Length: 310
Image (cartoon, rainbow, N blue to C red):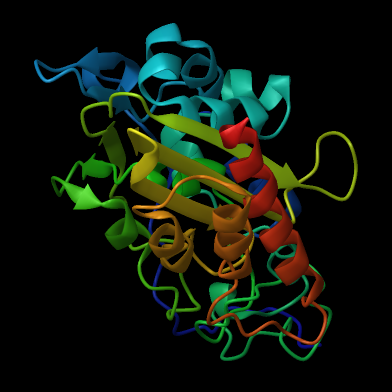
């Protein structure tokens, strides 16, 4: 494979933002990240959890993942988000890592993380994982890069249709934060030195049931192969609203709208669960080595729905 180099006429690198640093410091130690660093300024909005008059939460970007997982009011209002926060990484990382950092972290692809390998995200013209070892790659092939997005909170907040305020833009939809996944050079659509300040959630849905599950290759401290967040809001014995999002399956966190359609207006019985799970991988185009993720995704959707039914 090609050795990663920087052309003499390449533009100067913009400063990278440092918050908790659990991702950035690792990249700098390995030599992937070089150049200037700007420390994120802590403000009241970015460090706290606020509640507006409609009962909706606004979470600061520098709130730790552990705080999201342990906050009782958040857990009651947004159980899928709290469960996802409690399930990611390790207790040590959750106590340091932040909401904004989790959303804005860089790819975990081993080609990108190798300082001696060139790839799209480091300025090359091709993705070496596509013809190479893409065992942990995507099943929804949306662009030239086949590395899945690593943000667990991104999937959960997508399921909650949250919005982001940055130091330059307001009310940015979560899908717009990540983009459509077709630009293989980027992990998100933030501009250089643009930083997330807050994440706003909609008012809680009365009676909501939600759960999060991930499939991993070892029992502890592992990145998920596939993860899902499922929300259902009942109306009598029918599902009035369903939101399902997945991670580890596409270049960006992905709404599983076919599953949502299969659930809406139905009773959450065995037949509905089976039909919804079969649609989890609608339009998937697995790579030669990632077909196993289709089975994992369908199984996770089925098990989460069975958990909610119980």
